[in-house]
Length: 240
Ligand SMILES: [Fe+2]
Ligand SMILES: [Fe+2]
Image: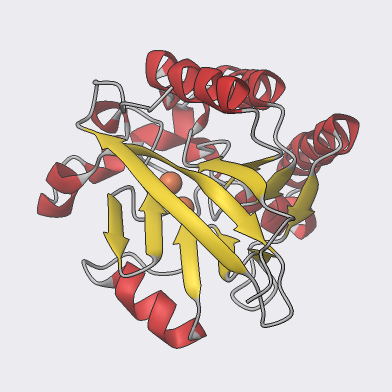
């Protein structure tokens, strides 16, 4: 067998959720990416929380959630992380979806924030993927990397089986592994995500970072990946 000489180091996190981010956990993971000298640094989406833009926000507390702290924290997180790749999440694309809203005020606000977000990604040199069940994935090695499109207890297994691929995703907020597929958990503080405080699944939320090496091969790629995870509020351990 020909030895693979083109291994590249990769590290991924996701679900920072604007000012709901746990900065200690996030900076700890970014510092690891720096020490690890990851060539691919992947943010798997939900950079922002966008609670005020949620379609059901009207008449709820979310409607009054300030936009600037959420947005500024998301921008700060991207600047600190310097991702090479971003797969936008469902919370991010609320802005995109509202760009053609009949309310001129709403479409202008959402469109301005979305365009600024895209401009920052471009300035950082990050490649991006839309939140799209078919096109929302990057492929590195033998694995597809994207935000995630299901939320149930078996969503990692189901998505990997649906794609017939190894996957790395965010969205479920549970750091976990299924065969050679992973979920990176969340970087946010679960206590701040108000919409999730009254369901049992939130008790399984955890922080995480997936890292390792990927390579392109004649037979479709290879990867050696690991998940480091921790309980909410504590730091995932890393080997260096
Ligand atoms: Fe999320
Ligand atoms: Fe999500």
